[in-house]
Length: 456
Ligand code: EPU
Image (cartoon, rainbow, N blue to C red; front, side, top):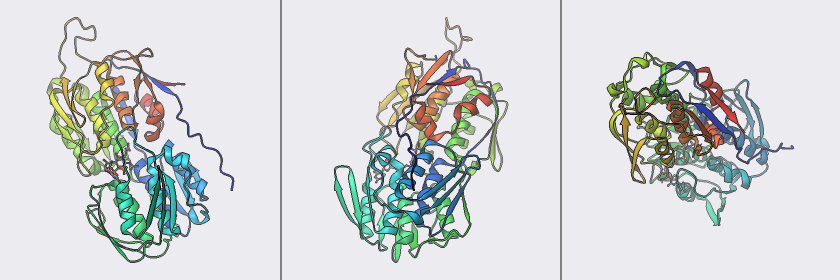
């Protein structure tokens, strides 16, 4: 089968955003897409199936396109219907377990494919990307687990070759790793005998994948707890069952924090508020009024809430159900406006504060205490003399001569939030990163009343 080329080069688009000059004037409804970090794992899980696996509610993001490309290069039949939000994958046609080097280098998430491929075909080889923008992101926990399951791992530079028929074993993860838990869970589904995974991550995306695999014949117990027990067996059979991608809790949380910062009235639909309690409880405690439904969150009449009445607070990122690292930059952008001081402590990744320099250039009052911790002093609706923007302290836009950057997906959203809150026109480079996680962001923001455009 001929695989059409996929352009791996990062495009050079910028986003140009007119700031709302501190007014909370966005208004409307936003619908949340399927979770990026769930759909990628479901796509990798297709390798465990003897028949076609269908994924519903799939978002149309760059990472999904890249993983589809990688699967096709391995020989899988992948049909992506963006209009129907559906992906169909038939992995029975896979002929290569040597993952395309360029694509794996460009996408850390591709490491998840190694578990199902190794378990099904007894071998896999791939190149891991080095460090990435948010931290070193090693794969030592994957390698240790593969060795425990009986595989032989050889490494040459950044090229890994892993061989061997997998047998069940006990694996204790030294850190709660999302990708590691998912990858080993998938590998264990085809390994011989019983595998016990301990200190597992418990993110909703892991739970939803595990539940689907069980529906298709996998024997997994302890789902959603730190210890999962898996009895390996033959290939799974979907038999027409579809994996329904759960709502993207990080996308919903991003819009929620944007709404708290810049919207008068924002209805966030098709989300699961139970997955966002760490965020909604922090916002409510600070004084932001939220109406929480079964699958919606409504920020209503926010324009009446004065910043002086919204208190600052401190946050430590934590594995689920704690506060997600993937909402850390967006929360810092929000805290630039609250009243008082708050500390953001990043416990998961060691390099996730690069965007802070951009916020500071815009006038945010943030001090980097150490690589893991920043102190944010909120403006709190404070008046400043000589300021033409309504006498309030606010972020100031940065244009083409000193542009802002999307350092990674989530930092990119935080900078969009800051640009929307600011006074003046901002230019944000590297929109590519934002596209990796947020589908058609500028269209959706424009529908809420933002003035935003994309430029090459
Ligand atoms: N870690 C190791 N060794 C390993 C694996 C992980 O030291 O072998 C460390 C990492 O360096 C990190 C910590 O363990 O410090 C947790 O990393 P984890 O493995 O949980 O992260 P991941 O699976 O690579 C996923 C999401 C990230 C999200 C993290 C944490 C996907 C595709 N990615 O990454 O999402 O930040 O879990 O929740 O699911 C994003 O969406 O913007 C994003 C970065």
